Image 1 (cartoon, each protein chain N blue to C red):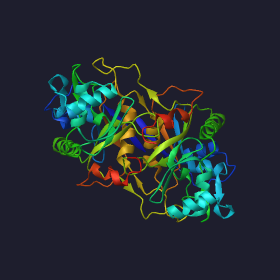
Image 2 (image 1 turned 180 degrees about the vertical axis):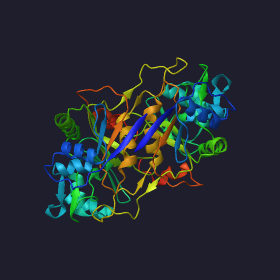
Image 3 (image 1 turned 135 degrees about the vertical axis):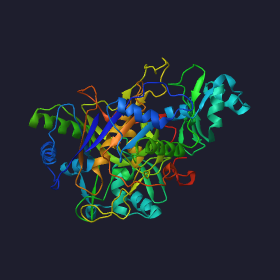
Image 4 (image 1 turned 90 degrees about the horizontal axis):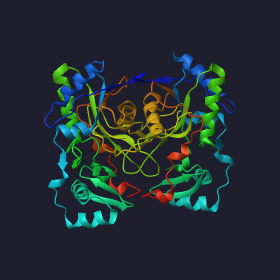
Length: 249
Length: 249
């Protein structure tokens, strides 16, 4: 059996906060103790806030490219400037939607730049610079505070082609491999499996979202009881399909 | 707290089997009783088997189109014939990969046709004709057997653009809305939320996959503790993005 436990964080996260401490005390306040083997799933928003990845749009001078794009897509031009700065490639611009490839290599709307759940009408939250490193930091922070060996998954909520609606996905990992491979495995009749590689951390991100909600103060969830091999080195990069291998870019 | 409970099904599912009965007894044998409010997540494979959606490739006469496509993509031509029959549109054919839009409107590899976990080397499993109806049937079957009101989600494992690895998604639903809307909701600062609609049944499918595995006999999982409004009418169709609204087709 797997359990998904919500972790409330009552205070606003501020730049410089020790997120590991915030999460450990949030878990205690939510009635649970972090255990070794837990997967701690963290919405990137509080990571970005703790790392100071918040931009005041009033300080932004838009480039010519941003002006043109903002006009054609009917968007705030300072916001478009941030979106472009956070991207390494514009993938689609249509119907007021900007799909970009972020500097990390994620393909998503608006480079993940988000104006909800941030204080101040002119502020926007941007993704952590290196979400794997952020996850690693939280992981070692938790080890230091309560001597538990956990995995950490940092998430964002992305749309996707073909299907309506958004789902929570992983954007940074530590202590767990991003995929679970079935290559070489056989089915119950001894035949090769069609499914060869499950994006397990994306499924964990989705599972966690079920208790995280959107408007409440539950930016963290603990996934308990999932069996995985603890690893020292892991990266979200194994989930990034290159443009060359993508049939849809 | 949400729990995800694995349900083992030890015997092979055969055409004509009463899946509701299989699931209820499977749950009991796995140490749990189905409760009202549970979401019963079922891998489509056992649904297809119970509905006789298994094809013997030796009985298939490939069309000219299938022959051409099979040659260019180095695939079994009878398999390609089935894939084409199950599709209403070929979306991509490259590097030996066929992405189709199924008759239901799902965009996935090989129209969901699958040769693993089916007995007989020449057999292939195809998706249920109407997975919503299949889910409905299981739902009312469970109500009849043990007088519990559950939701049912039927799943398959799909790849996706941009990201490596497959995830479990919903292909049929009953008793639960496929999405959870946040339209009109505000964040904790009273601002409009960026995320407007979560594909909640896809997240539930992903959560369930964490206990379902691929090579074991766990084709069913119970997701317990997720709060949702029971509905009488629901359909997976609300998750289908039309070609016209898709930036990537």
